[in-house]
Length: 400
Ligand code: ADP
Image (cartoon, rainbow, N blue to C red):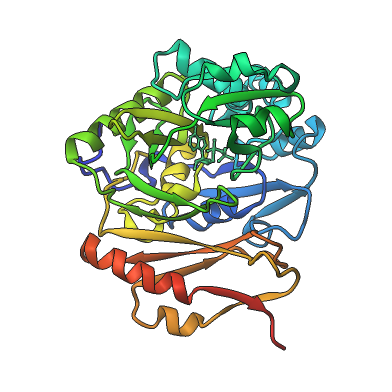
């Protein structure tokens, strides 16, 4: 069995997969779409997608589609009736329905207990604390309890306030001064207050845990976020950190995921602080934006790895084939409606840029519409080329 990121892995064959495995995916977004696209010929698998909108990225390529509400227990049960194994590509779903289905013997990967921890950023931070996983100091309270005394326990003038449930892609995360937190408090309900980590290097690792407990950890990824939207804009791998530090990050990532006690594919987002401390920010229990570059960049992409986990196939090789970067293609702030990617033929003509559009019918301000992967023989060349490509990628109104 493979036990670290550098070991070569067995190639999957149909020998251990003799019958069709029906995978049910809760959510029909781009993560579901790219999971379905990762199916390889010797893997006997078919997909059913549950999603509210028939006009979602995964619907056109799923074998079966169930139109329904991701928070409705009956709709999740009808997906279960069509599936041997169920997973999700979005966290904001009815976890109680999954807990009940698991009790009835349904295979759900990751286990619903993972979602119970991760759906609530407060419970997730408590999980880190209970398991001695290093993380930014925090407190949990209600918005009305934000007082000068409470904020004085955090260093500096800036704090981070996060809504505990329902946030995604930076929505629900506010970085603000203590005086704004007190005088212009825009929050309601239960919140998580966290130390602001200044000048952090944002790193992620993808961790794969197979059904038999085997694991694989991908090389570290260096990520850059849009300061306004807190949305990841650009990332690349390998990260510009020493090998020993990368191994330490991979170990922390693996150990915290293993504490969840579940198979699955997980992205662990971490801060590398100014003092070179490693603090886990959060875990995403599914394929993640920080692993999109693995489609062209790694021997086994995060999506193929996810399929291997769901179907019980051996894990694939997570190592990089070549340095790779990912640039999110996001709708501009001033455009809604029909759109197109400008210059696509020019951008891809050298064969080192791969465009993935997500089949979203309309753009909206800051909507993720696709991503581009850039590959290069060296990290230095990659960073130069990625800067060129960033300038060329542009979403414009559709011309007819
Ligand atoms: P989401 O779950 O919506 O992605 P995160 O908790 O990952 O939210 O926060 C989004 C981004 O906000 C982070 O990647 C980082 O850029 C910034 N951020 C979040 N927490 C902190 C923090 N404690 N200190 C500094 N920046 C932070």
